[in-house]
Image 1 (cartoon, rainbow, N blue to C red):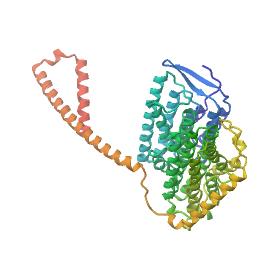
Image 2 (image 1 turned 90 degrees about the horizontal axis):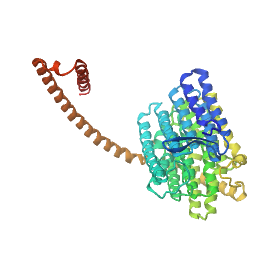
Image 3 (image 1 turned 45 degrees about the vertical axis):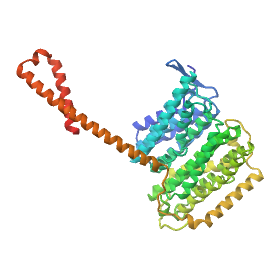
Image 4 (image 1 turned 60 degrees about the horizontal axis):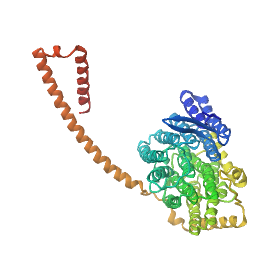
Length: 558
């Protein structure tokens, strides 16, 4: 075993354990120190560092360090710290402990060197993130979330088992979807990415989490999916179509949505769609674009969700129809939300501008003209729903009469940290580019690109205000694809439960009949004096206890 450093996930696992046994200020200190320790371990990991083990005849790489792992490990550790800072006043101990476990699982995935280790941490993420949703009492949404991720996990496990059986190796490396096993692996990854038509779990579950829980949820599941797609399926052309479906699905539903946090949840699907499309293009520039866009997306999406979460925290409301005019009493939160909105819209001098354009540029370099136009149109759609709609309806437009105070200082510090990062990376993109995983070279600030993007945003903004009467907030419910599988699921559940009840009823009658018969035979044996001579006292005691147990079960449940 070669051990060249501790796995970064270990710091967060230890932190999660300590959060269970500590209280008060000490617990808050653990919440903040654990992600910092994880970040130190990430940057202490040299290229080629490995921890190996031999299990069941296979050579496992439990821990592997490289540029791509460090890239994702860095942002996962940073956002775990920012999320912990934002959640310092979160009284729900289950949520905060599960959040650190969730982040640890994400770090375990990006540093896993074999498919078995990857799958274990993949499922840790699924269970921990479900607890984040369940921690606030959202049992139904959490169960739907868990079922979809278990479905993805089953597909992934089946595919990985088939791939290991076919290749004889557990190594996690690039592959092409040319066999059933590999298609199952790809499908399992895409479930976590939020690919259509199984995207609805994300806007269904994430907004049910607390003001701080959704910040954590937005960072890890979909981005670990981006990571494994970059490693496992770079250049798989099917991902271009999948990504485009995600891009436009997210735009349409976000424009129709009334709940501010569901708007941002649909926006996650939209933005991950850009990344999946970049992975499908498969060039060094597009892969770097997908990785770097994942990096900055985690930052500005967390900032947007912190802004929305702060509004929810101080007002208890999340529907756009119930909000408006909050800039007067929450100027700091509003400004941070605007910075996040500009960044997600790829406004020049923000982080989104220097990363999203890499994917669009890569499509142009490959001669994919139609794809280039579609991504450009989609960029305008992003500005409509996340760049303008969210801040306009929440902080401006009509006065809702609400005058809440700004959120607590820790929440403002977290927002300030991320807002500063959005501007810092936008102004000095070399801070990102020098660490790009695939080493591509890109210059975002050429005149044509800047002017073109400003024109796009200008006309998109004009279109928003021209169409504003049609975009007025309405108290409506938008049916998503989850309606179908909820209906199907309800039908299947009804059929299965009815069959199970009938089977259980028949079984109970059979057991009851057997008990009556046994009772008759026991009584007759006692009267005849045969029973003591046939069975020992210990056997009789065991038999009696078993019969009593069955009898109690029947009495309790029937």
